[in-house]
Amino acid sequence: MRLIVTRVAPPPMSAIADWYGGADLVDSYAVTLPAAASQDPATLARALFSRPPPWVRGLLRLRDQIVGPLGAKTTTAIGQAGASDGRDRVGFFPVLGRSEHEIVRGEDDRHLDFRASVLLQSDDHGARRLVATTAVRCHNLFGRIYLWVIKPFHVLVVRSYLSRLGTLD
Image (tube, rainbow, N blue to C red):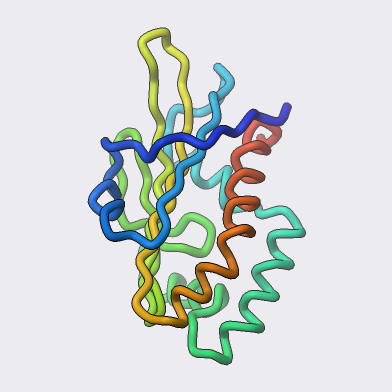
C-alpha cells in the first residue's frame, strides 16, 4: 500500500530546527504510518533511504557525472568516506544525530551544507506519522544554482520515498 504524502510545516521540535532560519531551502513532508510500522526512527530511515528505486539511482549517477568534475562531492566519495570514518550511515550519508524519536543525516561541502531529519511523531489518539525535513544552506553561487536545479527532483524523491514506505518490508 502506498502512503499519502502531505507537505507540512517544519516541526519546531526537530533537532535541525536551528537550521530553519537563514536556510536556502527548508521543506517537510509527512505520512501517517500503518499500525504495524516500526517505532524506531533509525529503522524507518533505513527503510526510506537504503534502497532507492532505479530511477533515483539513475538521477544520482547523472548528478555525480555533472557535479563531480565541478568539485562537489559525489555519492561514491561520500560513501567511501563512510567506509573509513567509522560513522553510522543511512544510505550513503552519515548520521549526525539521533534520539528516541529522530535521526539526522547530513553532509557539508564547499558549495552547500544540508541536514535531513526523519522524525517520528504521535498524536493524542495514538496515530503516528513520519516527518522528513530537509534544510539546506548554500555557501556560494554554485550552491544556489545547484539547489535551484535539483529542488524539483528533491521534492519528487522525498515524496516517492515516503509514499513507498508502506510497500517496504
